[in-house]
Length: 252
Ligand code: UDP
Image (tube, rainbow, N blue to C red; front, side):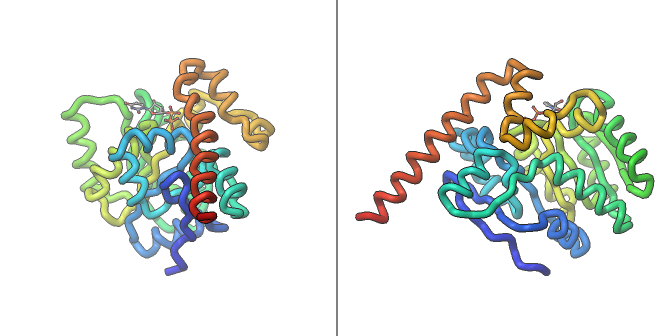
């Protein structure tokens, strides 16, 4: 097994920094090591401050990647880490490509999104990588009975990689409650990735992402997000206060 990823603390939450996340995930896959991957951004960090269950789940996750620009800036400015932003959707895409290329025969499962969105996302991926083994898909809106059926399906199928796109924090809570069903699987919360892969929504142009402005595009696409996005300035302020406190403690 390769070395565990280097861990840093961002507002009390772990973030793992490594050069090649997908390679590490592929190793976990081959070694049948069950893991939970969290893609951390500023908004989620602020949610975790108010939701101790979410905070505990993030603390227990085997891999927390720096998904948001705020988290990366924190790592660079305050912890002097040469960290790169890894959007969760891109890590998921790389993993799918590598699973296809390496012909690991790993079974993949897509769970989440509106009716038919996960199924359309699966069709898209099969058109890109015909060798991919997508064992099943399930929409993210359903009754209690359907959820029990989904749990049974997962138990029977034992997919090795399970993408859960229910949004934050629903997907993290769901993974924590259900990962025992497939203890050897890689479970990843992928937010709205199925919407993008199915063509239901589009991602921000690369130049916005490269300039840490992807959030602006999301606000334009989904204006109702404005309240959630107040977490961004809150994160910046808390980060500053947190570091000033840390510096004053060292100075004492
Ligand atoms: N979603 C779902 N079930 C729910 C609520 C949400 O499947 O009960 C899906 C929704 O259709 C969307 C995704 O979860 O595809 C949330 O996407 P978003 O981009 O809002 O994720 P976040 O920004 O929270 O990561």
